[in-house]
Length: 205
Image (cartoon, rainbow, N blue to C red):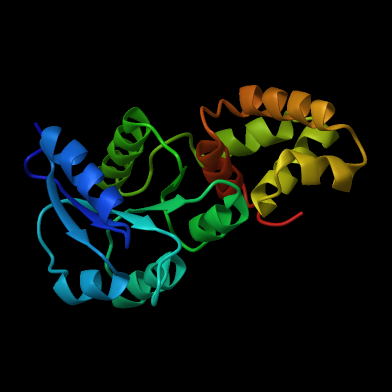
């Protein structure tokens, strides 16, 4: 059980907060929920190992503004942002701003638990989880020019349809390139791929 680990859930949706609270508490985590970023910042106190699951779109201070404020205050907790379907560009922006991971709605219980586990592992290892930068660079170097271009488009946050338009190829061809580069990069999710791309210095096309 993970009773020494605290998870902050920051979301303006009552149902989401209640659902995550029940799930995470059942897995042995301490859980504190807040309906706004402002309420979270007002209540936050340094304590046990912690992470935060933050909705990217909220009234008042949104998830992006909260990321910036946490960084400004020197709070070293890993933050996972939750985005709506189609908000990949915003999710990538959040990771560039310091989020450790992102989850797209709708998500499964297994997905949230897996991402939370990675966040705590990253904090425990002081952020040095995953392959070394040299290994990531080697994986990027093994990509074909087309695969590299698709990767750059994904880091921008473009979906397959937009990538196809930008590269003047079919959406099906984009899917093939994307599958190949995921395999070559040894990425198990889009957020994992984006983290590695940022490690390799790929930020814009």
